[in-house]
Image (cartoon, rainbow, N blue to C red; front, side, top):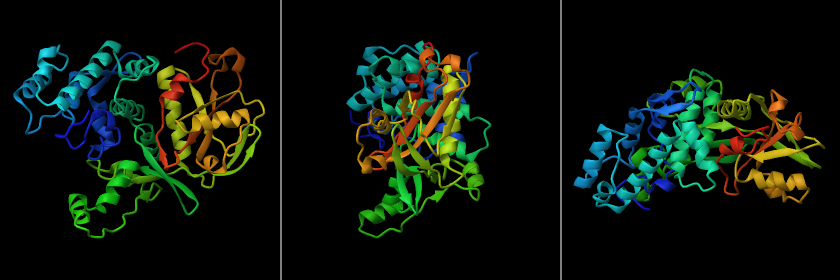
Length: 377
């Protein structure tokens, strides 16, 4: 599906472009328009669905036909209303019709589920993901925003971005740094000068190189206080680890900096697991993993899962591939009885790795689907 009317393009390929101009605390995810049920899970309001209708993929544009305008007005008036096939077919633009169908399918699935969390789990447990990545990332954004509500730690908020924003990882002066891939692309394209910079580049002009700041004690307050989203995704996060050598069933990892974003990421993942599964866990980045009784592991992304499998089975791993491993984590259940009986007392190892092109995209659903629980959550 393509959408030539909207600058964001098709929904299923828009996962990296939905948060350039956002309000403080990521309000573009809509968490401020959600309510909590007795379990603390997020229940959509009519305001939440209107928030979706304001997004560029669904908002009216100058070229919108009468059919699209009529349906949009009806949904704004009553966001949960039943939409007939005839009303959708009355939209002349094929891409606009496709976007509306995707939105309505998503809306109906969430309404049936009763909460964002139950719908999110259901999308992955169905065995066939039909939901655009954009929708899933917006769901995660809203959920982690609520999980961190009232948290003043800038590192926790920056680390939480990894759960729904694709990152690009680079090594600078021995430090492993990750930055928002969309912001990095935008700065490369515009030199930090916005549309003017884009025009200058198109005209052949050389643009200045813009460096993103690494989140630190000197700028943490500015990160927290950024207004209208300006600068919200313009900070690098330090994920520094150093891979030394492979062990029979693990790795030795040296953390070069005490103030690493890995610790913040671990705290966010702890909240994520307990929120969904009701299971308190402790997650710790490991400077050394040497465990001959390694029993269970899972990857936090597509790259680390097969890498951990090969290490566990003793398969040879090319040095270049091993260097893409950013970190390992040790996860322990507060109550071992919540684990499978044959694994009680054993840690679960988590992996975090970047792709060959330097991209890092977390799959937070892996922690919900692949932990060795005593019974299904």
